[in-house]
Length: 483
Image (cartoon, rainbow, N blue to C red):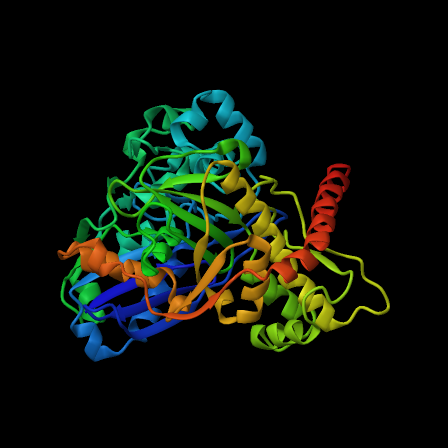
């Protein structure tokens, strides 16, 4: 048996898998996000550890006792600052925090080769600009910082006592030389840090330590090995068999991601495309990243006083695509690809006395799809060929949404058995690889439960709406720059 743990933004998920890849038990524990100021998004690192304990202890006890190795996945980019005693000095600054916008320009000015080294444009969501913000606004905290860890790696420290990270997660810090798969002293120096502040780097399946005896006793487990693991998107990709050149996935979680694996490092920072290491040695990937996806469904359901996502999807389906002139701009937390604008905010356009809740629901599904279409265009401009994407995340529950997405993106979508399990499954697969085995036989694609082809008629009907969406986004950006 293998244990995969995913430290997400809204919760921690733990799964136990068999050697044949079947998910035998799973449990989640909720997390909350603190937003004390505009653009801020924070979590207490010890909340991740507490939620991890709750999620693991919610698994079948008999299966836990048979676990042979543990893999970790987690939300990327979070800045977890530790003092000399390895305790957090402040709340962790998360991936969807936009406060360090000004520091991005300062970072690229301090290291003019930044984009060449990292393969990415500096964005507020990445880790390095957050440290410049702390240096400027919380100098005592910065001076006291001895170690910087990513969220899953803080949990690793609590579980094993080891400070380690993997290539895929580290690539999202802007401190990694992504082509060389090594920390960049130049990028660290531009942030006022050194190699001494960084954890050791490993490839995803490599063993980084063993479960502490006291944790093992609490979990009724042996002191099993813990592998490096992966950032959430790379782990999610492994969970659906996306391991090699040209294979891709669409993740519809809190954020939305189009992820395409490749056997070479292919950056395109000008269009805010992410170019990172994959969780397997010698593999890289490109991503278009959208800061709000299924989170738009949760927000809109709450705002419209709809009981939950399932009911919201049903409302949207009852209205049907192109139900009315309503548009939704899904920028609840700003946007990355292709706009790189943390200040961009969401909005409804085209409302009237005839607008219904069902038509608003339909507009939300379409708006998220249009944002992803902008992202896939940026990937294609970089020369990436995309014909098929496996779908994971909470948004994979709605096949109606899938018809809209497939038609707008112009790709075949594959809905897989267990696709909603997400990164925790990939973490468990990395744990299995850590005990020996071949990625080709372990990181296989789960059975297909549905395949959705692009509907050319629906695409044609949605095309004018997407053009309005793009004009409205441009106008909203211009408007918000004036305030």
